[in-house]
Length: 413
Image 1 (spheres, rainbow, N blue to C red):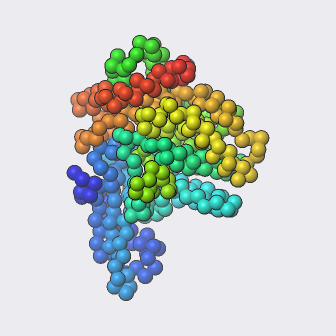
Image 2 (cartoon, rainbow, N blue to C red; image 1 turned 45 degrees about the horizontal axis):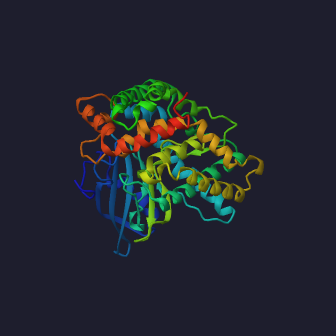
Image 3 (cartoon, one colour; image 1 turned 60 degrees about the vertical axis):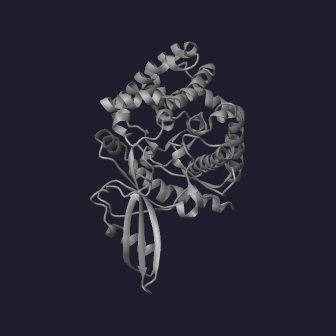
């Protein structure tokens, strides 16, 4: 199946749902001449949701034709995932971020004379199921970088600047306007879901520990990995109650290669623009979470650890610059030393990345991969998870990451 192959779409997804959106975009709208939904991502690029690209040809009052496309995300019919959605309102949260939070933050930058855009424009339709509807950025030249290759230095710096802008303005927003009241400032994973999350972590941990002897010098850190594995869910849940002594902001919550779009000139290794997508899991917590999550999962192997401190220094420079621009209280701006202390304090996030994020990120594309097999124990899932934790690419990355985390004390809790 190619990216443009037509796919089975939800039965509720009818073209009539988009008439009001199209009327707003095209004031002289007359009718929809054609409508075609296709797969929005290549096979093996998405486990948790259905991503569709929707093509429309719109006839205007003067009989001329305009073409436009949208990206639509909607959930799979997987019971555990639907239960997580129900208890955490993940699609409603993401729509709220795109429709309300993002525009407010962009306006705060405009008010101080800086044009910053964090992502696509979102739209609302009267859908009978969960959804997020966004403008299609591909016609403007935006695309992902191959997750199997990872981001080069120029693209990493582009992400870190955008992330620093996001963290700075959300911290300033809370400082000046008070805490967000929306439900995404509640725990990312509700307490009522802790048993399900623990089940997923236990399942994945069983395969990681089984494959541990395949990793370089595993004897050095094996005991530490065995010790942190049963604690990782409690450690991650600890982020639900942010320490007021930390430098906290609204984290993206799931910032990795496939959730970042770049507009890059041909032949250039630096992006003109960097946008974020997939705001289903934002949380108010230490900025260390986003930094560890992004840098350990999305950078090219040769940069991941060798440039880690350099990347943190660059992020900090951008963070300070934008906090000052937004008139954030000078005495509350974190020092570089303090930021590194936060990265050490929350270093367990690195193990979470190795356990949960890197296995699917570093796995070769396969048409058969799905969320059910990833998070539960099934016959097909056994082979998938063994491949995830034992393939050469994952072994290469984790054989560098685990000793690095161990030597930083990040596996000792």
